[in-house]
Amino acid sequence: MPFVPASDGVLLHYESTGSGRPIVLIHGWTMNGRFFHKNVKALAAHHRVITIDSRGHGRSGKELVHLTMEQVGRDVDTVLAALDLRDAVLAGWSMGMATVYNYLAQFGTERLAGVIDIDMTPYLFADEGWPHGVFGTLDARSSLDVQRQMIADRTGLMSTLVPAMFAAGSAPEPEVLAWWADESTTVPDLTALALWVSFSSQDWRPMLPSIDVPVLLAHGRKSQIYPTPVWESLAELIPQTSLVLFDESGHSPFWEEPEAFNTAVLEFLKEL
Image 1 (cartoon, rainbow, N blue to C red):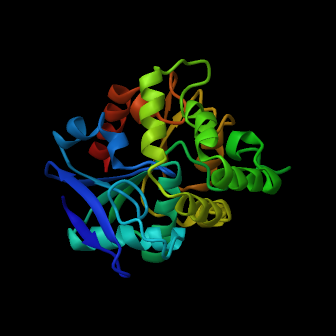
Image 2 (cartoon, one colour):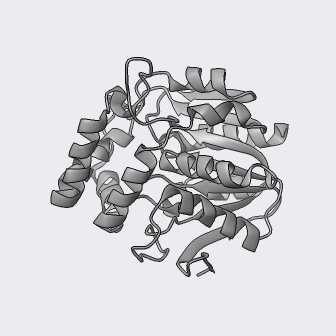
């Protein structure tokens, strides 16, 4: 298995397939690179596809050290530098997009040709002037409730969150829900908690106008995690955007509509 040591010695697992312009797929909170298995082969027919397991996730090291989004952003740079990736596209799903923001804030776009935002908000809390929080309602109190349940009843929390990853009104197969929950709960509780606290406290809206590479907004029209049209606000704030809405997808269009998702990504890469 390929690993790269982070600056603090934590081993970062990655997989690389194909050749050509690199596209780096970055997973969401408590998930891992295996969630992109419906995408790698199709994308790798034209590009080099890299998946990374963030620290504490998947097959990367589980040490309870430096569990901040800033460090996760630095970990991405470690992998990009180790593989000497240039002219790359970073595709972040959910917390993976928060990872991309943390990377951009620290390293800019020197190595990048573009970014793909997969169903993510730049700020997790909803308030009077920002309706695009988690579930459209997340506030500080409900975030504390989520944190408490992470420690007290992680299985119960995932039984609620995993079905919400799919389109509103859909009925994912029980085997799929079980696989997602099993993969998620391999992440230690304290890792999940620390990263939730870290990325839920960040507000990336002020940085968005400074992003100087094209950004594809790839959002599910039936997202339960972000039920409001956050893509409209993102398009207003980010200088160069294109938009693809997946009519039958929720928070996970790369899984729910993989062929349409793969086609949209390949078309975006052609235009760079």
